[in-house]
Image (cartoon, rainbow, N blue to C red; front, top):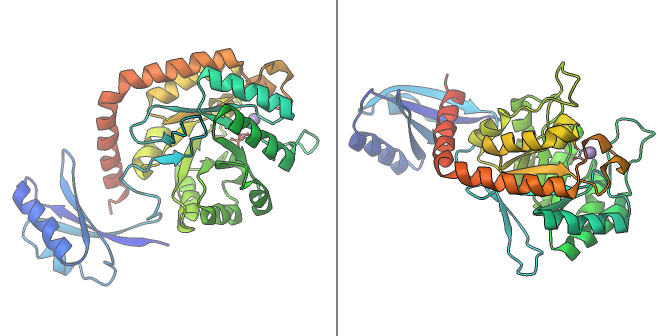
Length: 365
Ligand code: PEP
Ligand code: MN
């Protein structure tokens, strides 16, 4: 579905009073007008039911140089307002946890797979002590080979849930089908849709109906536009509590598991206003690269990280090459906060400017 938007390009150097007067008269027509200024031009976005309106009506307004009719392929997803996601707090003071907006980075950490009740319970306490905020752990595991361990299924969900409540952290876990979603819904605080299922439209529609926060990973070879349209499926169902995750895309490079596309982070933030986190574990597949890529992710504006951790990484049942220890995680959590604190003051302004200029670019005729 495309939603029509009118763009009024204002005359060069038009004064503020006249520009704001145009916005007011648009609002008097029952429409929404948003004035966007860049160094080169001033533009008003006219939103509302503009399909039936003739552009002539607007081109006659004094100060309007040009009227452009455009349409956004993802009207619910593309937004220039911050849309932070709040998760329930299970810690002793019940404080909720916010991802996105002007909040410090949120770290989601835990094993690739939940291996047993004891394993997740022990690791949960350790990742919490290291500074993580959300416990991750796969129970329904997508495995490239059908001969590999594919998780403890609903029992694993239960172990993860209990471990999260015990250590006081919300939990996130992946589902791959609407049936698994039904199994998992009461056990997770955030539903993860993995990279392989970004194109699973029935699943996207179903999580759209749940109202639970969703962590939607970017598909292995998905363009940003395909990713935006996958988000749109969820939002169309009425759920806008969506967290995005750049987890590396497939390129010609073989030394790393995937190629971490960090440019997607500020781009997605500017296009959608949604929280964007980075998963350096699946992006690189290499233990030694997790720390430098985590630093880079926070430096470019990521709202958080998702990292695979194991008490004994070499013995991890799945993805052992990319698992790090709880003490390595502690270093990353500490550094993430330092980098965020150093950059945050000036950075918000940069994001704001970028968001506006990207929207202008996306809407040009
Ligand atoms: C995971 O996070 O457990 C996972 C399988 O990641 P991805 O979907 O990014 O491959
Ligand atoms: Mn994994």
